[in-house]
Length: 163
Image 1: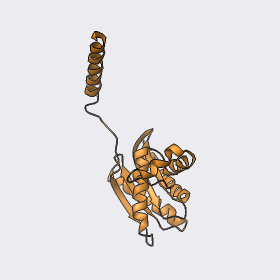
Image 2: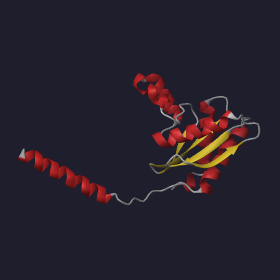
Image 3: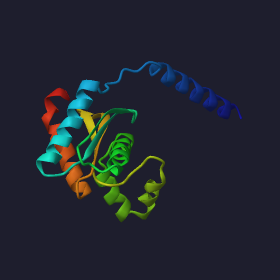
Image 4: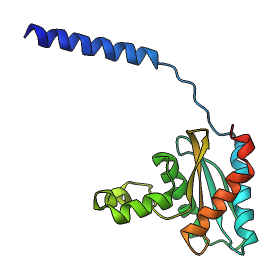
């Protein structure tokens, strides 16, 4: 019993030390200017290929920072792009990789049941180094792989700002 009490006291002190060490955190996040540049770059990249899309950019918490809907982009592209961006930011992965993983792994198939998640290609994390600061979701091209290409083209255009 005495060892149990000592172990509990040690665990509590470790929690207190850990909690105190991370009471205040500094995190990188996305500015409106950067989010707008990424969204515009994705819509332009898709337009260059003849695709009318919507691009939504979210910050690290999945909150919308910028949305651009191309002329003639379907109304469904608004929700799809936002869900792809949210999914990617939340999981810190591309939605295409998540979709493929869910198709191959029955244990991951239930990811589609998470509210707000959309496992279709077109969601890509925005990173500074290895830190995810947000994500972009693109919807409206004739295939998620094409949506993802537009998202990646937009990120490539701002790569010098992501340092």
